Length: 457
Image 1 (cartoon, one colour):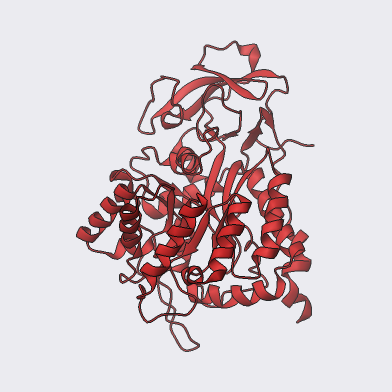
Image 2: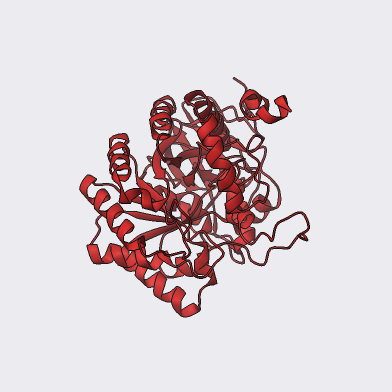
């Protein structure tokens, strides 16, 4: 199998990558000083039998042990704590005509009902995993659309894929459906199924039937129920929260206060939280304090919410309008408050986001530019490495450290500036110490599934 990239690592069981650059925040035990504004450590990395054997100061390893990479950046394998693999790549057959959340929901539901059979879901999810693997992703938590009867189709497909990809990509499932499903028997059955699957109990904070209020009277009752179901089964919660351009969307603080009141022992991951950025400074502070007290983690999806939020008005006679805000939550403030903040990839080539390639390095690059995670870059690279590894309880990932599996992404770029200025198409991806083929699957493989309308028009 061919190896692609700007260099080819040695094939021996013990070798070194010499004179590399690693962000200091990803080297927990090396005790080597970072340099410059990027806080980059210059070091040699020894790999033996598929694991990281040593991290030493640059120039201390014998030349014959491996190539001199002249400051190339080395990162640990990347993690995506919030994805939707089952929706992936349906954009050609389910086009979002308006580009917003309502437009996405309007075409996704009918497409799911008509076409999400087992083979369709399996092939599209497999395609996405192949893309992610070639990009250096080592773990994905994916939400699975869970309105009945879809779980009976998708959950077995997920189980099969998790077995097939074991040792290559760690897969974690979370349910996703409107919150009021948990007010009925369907919610109880779903909790049982996801517990049997070994996943997370997830939901959006929206209801099946559109309500006049973004926080309907039944909200607290439904949240109480999802907490009860999770507690009875020992499940963690993974929620889509306040993904809206309306400051009246204020469910995050209610979730945090309810978790604190109940003394919820599980983990809670809150995704999106877009509307928090539209609140007053005082309410933002109050919400963040409540989240910290409840132990809530945050995952932001900057590229997708930049795409979805602040579009409109729509109509044949409506003029095109420039978006008025970025759709992204208060990342800097949440992190400064002491919350764990990850960045996720979310949707790929579907009605909720027409672009993407399951590339968490590209997701990070977009997040830096969208949310100003620069000047300085600080340790934001942890948001796609060490932080999601901690949130997903995968301690083997997220750092470059002795004893860990040698799952690495090697870039020609020498610092963050070079990495963010130019797409790193020639990266070398190392898994268990060996370089892999990073050739991406061809979109044409899915033509018979997703080019349906084009073929029949």
